[in-house]
Length: 479
Image 1 (cartoon, helix red, strand yellow):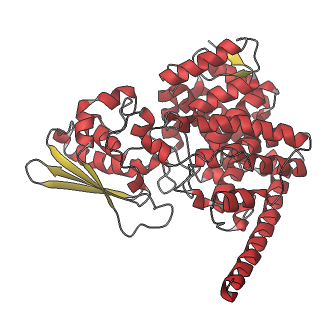
Image 2: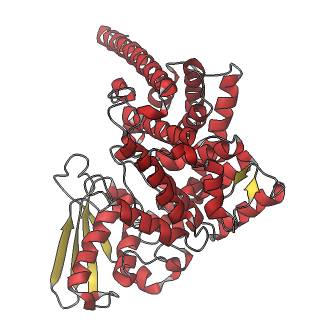
Image 3: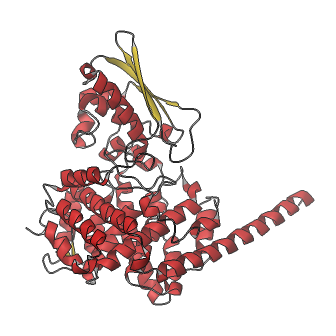
C-alpha cells in the first residue's frame, strides 16, 4: 500500500472517531434535555403551534379514509380487533376504537397519504406525521393528560428535526419518511412514557438501527409502499421503546454508524443534535400545505394561479400550447409526466401544473384517482417541461419557481413565486390553517375544527389541565 494512501486512511479513521464521539456527546445532551423537559418550560407559542399541527395532521388522516387501499386496510384492522372494546381511536368516520397498535398503524398509514400533513423545510422531514399516530394512540390507551401529549408532540418534533439536520445527506437518495420514521415515533412514545435519559437514549439508538431505507424515487414512480413507511415507523418505534425498557438497546454512537457509515450520509454537524435546545423550537419552524402535492410543486402552482387570476379565460388550458417550469435542482426530480398512481400524481410537477391549469390549484380531486384518467390533465402534463432555475437562495427561499405559459397564439405569460404560501418564509395565519382543518374534516370528523380551537384557547388561558385528552378526542370522533 502506498504511503500516501496509508496516511489518508489514517486521517479518515481519525475523522470518523472524532465525528462518532461528537455524535455521542451531543446525542446524550439531547436525550438529557428531552427527558428533563417540563411542560412549563415550553413557550405558549410553541404549544399553540403544536396544537395546530395536531389538528392539521388529524384532518389529513381523516381526509384519506375513502381511498380504496386505506379502506381495505382499515377494514382488516377492524376485523382483527374487537371494535368498541379497544384502547385508542382510528381516525375515520365513526371513530372505531381498536388496540393501541392497530389504531397507530391505521392512522399512520393515512398520515401522509393525501400529502396534506405539515412538514419541516430546513431539511426535508415530516416529524409530526411520523410521531403523532403513535403518540395519540398511546396517550388514549395510557389515559395520559393533555400536558403529556403536547410535551411529547413538541419533543418528538424537536428530536426528529435535529436528526434530519445532522444527516441531511440521506437526500435525494432516500426518503425521510423511511429514514427517520422509527426515530420520530420512538421519541414521541419515549417522552410520553417519561423514560429516563439512559433508557430514552437506548430506545432512540435502537430505533435508528430499524430505519426503512426507502428510495426517494418511489413516490416519483408512484410506489404506494411509501405511504406505509410512517406506519412501519409506528410499529418499530413502539418496539424500540419496549426493548429499551427491558435493557435491549443501541449505543450512543449508533446513529453515526447507521446514517453515516451504513447509509452513506455525511454528518453535517453533530452539534445540530443539541444546539439552542430550549431557546429554539422547531415546531414553530415548519410549514402547512394548502395543496395535496409534494411541497416542491407549491411555488409553481401558486405562480400559475397568479397568471390565471389575471387571465381567467385561460382556465381549462385550451389556449395553452406548452408550459415551462423553472425550478430548484431538487424539484427537477419530480418530472414524471404520466403518473400511474395517486402518489405518483402528488409527486409529479407536470401533473400538478396541468391539474392547476385545468381545475385550479385547490380543486379537491386534483390528485385523487379520477385525475389519473382526466384526459385534459394528461394532455397538458405531457406539454410541461422542467428547467433548472439558477441562483437558488438559501433556506427558507430554496423552493422557488417561475412558470411560463406558451400560448397557442404565439404569446407568452410568466410569473415567479419566491416561496409558497404556507412555507416558513410566508407562514399561514392560524385562521387559514383552521379553515383547512374544517374543510378536510367536516364530513368525517365534524367536531375537529372546534376541538382544535378549544385546545388553543385552553393553552392560551393556562387552563389545559381542565381539558381531558380522551374527552377531547371523543368530541370529534363519536356521534
